[in-house]
Length: 362
Ligand SMILES: Cc1cc2nc3c(=O)[nH]c(=O)nc-3n(C[C@H](O)[C@H](O)[C@H](O)COP(=O)(O)OP(=O)(O)OC[C@H]3O[C@@H](n4cnc5c(N)ncnc54)[C@H](O)[C@@H]3O)c2cc1C
Ligand code: FES
Image (cartoon, rainbow, N blue to C red; front, side, top):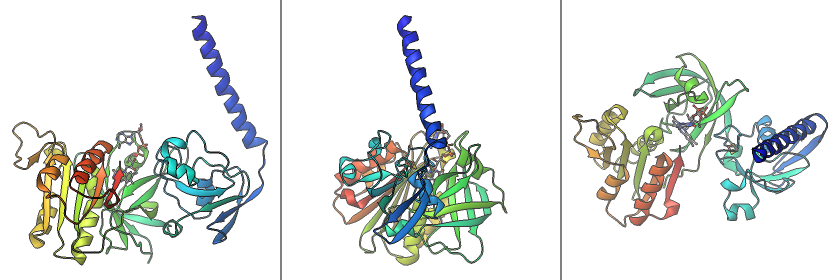
């Protein structure tokens, strides 16, 4: 009992001291104006010290991916800090490989600007923009997935690569937050973006999007993402999605067939029961026009007596069963982490190099 009280008292003291330090830093310490240099003089800025690097960049219209909204729990906000970032923090290390740590990669949401700071940001990210838009479609796809289309206001256009995502701004009690959603509309539709959003009970971003009506205003930034589609039409494309991971696959597949009508492409989509199936009819229609598109849906838990004659089991099983080994291929995977890991193992066994397997886990 004495030990328990001692531990509780010690814990309480640590929390109290941390709070005092945070408040003291906010109230008493003035870091003044600091220099924020991007890409060795390409974009020299002056920012108020004391904010995180992510906030300072955002205030200057430089939008770094931040799927968790700066909470330090997604690992998406990586940038290289060559000088002035202070020591690596324990909150960053779980998201950085040894190689990244050695190369001065940091999480922008964890690094505070306390002195002049020098960073390197890829040109792709420097061209990310903020858009205002209006909901033009809000349509129920399944019991928990909605398709939402945002028409970009005015004459602005978005230039995206297949498989990229945007970050929508949603209101929260602590101020606006951003959440990532894959773009499901193809690249040639550049005046709007479409998303497929699964409702997470109590979730800020997904609830906000599910409650939107046609005509509502939405702010978003983008496009983001590391997917690069190989331009060689002889390279076969493998798309594997689970849940809302179908969204980027729709973008990739429709963009491909707009450009290369005969390209070989496989779509594997894994869902639980028949109630989770969506967009199958549309993909089957596309496959009638483009016979080199192969569409395979797999149900992991089909209901008893369900009207289903397709594949069953987790989606990596049909991937393993149907793909011949050792072809020239590139693969795009989106869905839950376990699905990504299982499918990646299968694809590597089939001879696809890890550099040719792109994925987003969510
Ligand atoms: C690159 C990328 C692309 C994405 N694309 C899509 C997409 O196309 N469609 C889509 O619907 N989502 C997508 N997501 C996920 C999306 O960004 C949000 O994480 C998701 O909508 C939950 O956000 P929220 O604000 O509603 O929930 P939050 O307010 O962040 O979380 C609320 C609670 O739910 C829990 N929670 C959070 N996420 C999940 C989850 N997935 N399942 C169960 N519990 C959860 C949290 O732990 C928390 O307790 C993507 C994520 C990334 C990183
Ligand atoms: S924004 Fe998510 S870890 Fe930095």
